[in-house]
Each structure stands twice: as C-alpha cells, then as structure tokens.
Amino acid sequence: MARVFVYGTLKKGQPNYYRMFESANGTAEFLASAYTTQKYPLVIAGKYNIPFLLNIPGQGHRVQGEIYKVDDKMLKFLDDFEGVPTMYQRTQVDLEVKEWVGKTGEGEERPAAGSITEAFVYSTTAYQPDWPSLPSYESYDAYGDYGLEYATREGRD
Image (tube, rainbow, N blue to C red; front, side, top):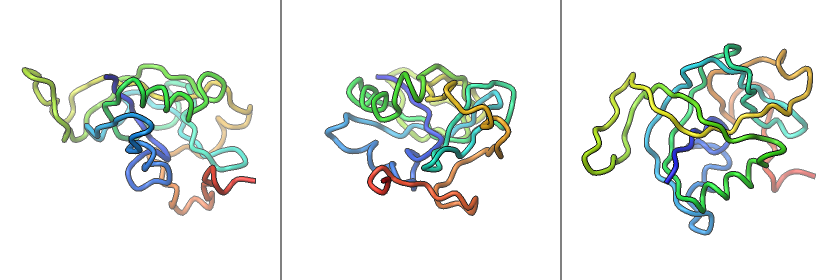
C-alpha cells in the first residue's frame, strides 16, 4: 500500500473523485486532509483548465489536499490517469496533517494535527514557459469562481 496526496480533480466533491472508488481501478481509502510543507505553484492551465502542481519548491502556496492509502492496482491506474511520466511525475512530498480520520496499522499511532508525514504527489516539470506566472492557488475547486471551468475527459473535443 502507498500513500498518495491529491490536490485537484480527484479530491472529494471534484469531477474525478469517483475514479478513486471504482473497484476496477483498485482500492483507495481516505486518510487525512493535509497541506504541503513547502510552497508550490498550483495553477490552472492548458486548453482544458487542468490543475497542475508545478515542481518549483519555494514558490506559490502551501497546497491543500487529501491523503489516500491506495493499493498497487490503484497506484498504476493513477499513474496512467495522470500521464506519468510525460504529463506528470510521481514523487514523494512532505505533508503537514490538518486532520487524520483514517485507520492506522496495528500498533501505529494516529498522526496528530500538525505532524509531518509523506505521500506521493503528482507534479509536473513539463509545463509551458508562462505557467509559473499564472495565478497560483492554495486550494483547487473545479467549481470555483476562477472563471476557468474544468473540461472533463468526456467533455473534451
């Protein structure tokens, strides 16, 4: 099992959240809400208004998201869904726990709010030259009032 930090369309209430719980993709269990310990630019970019976490540590904001425990099948699905290695890369990131609600392993203590943990994150180094100058967000919401509506895969031409 691996931990994955999601910050965009895979979060609760977002357009691709359902994919985390389609049994054909594998299994996922929500563990916690968290923030990145470092700042990163989280931008909405491209033809389909996709959220991208640019792998530029120290710029932008501490990004808010969710930690999931996933099995190998779900991790492979997420790698494919995120276009690893061309669109995104999966790397480890340190996270500050906001609220831990998931189960812990036998003998493991539940991480307290403010504690630091690790998870994989999908970030990109393959971005357009102007993307670092786009507005950067702490939290992504496909239904937010950014004026940048996310185009689901089904709705793309």
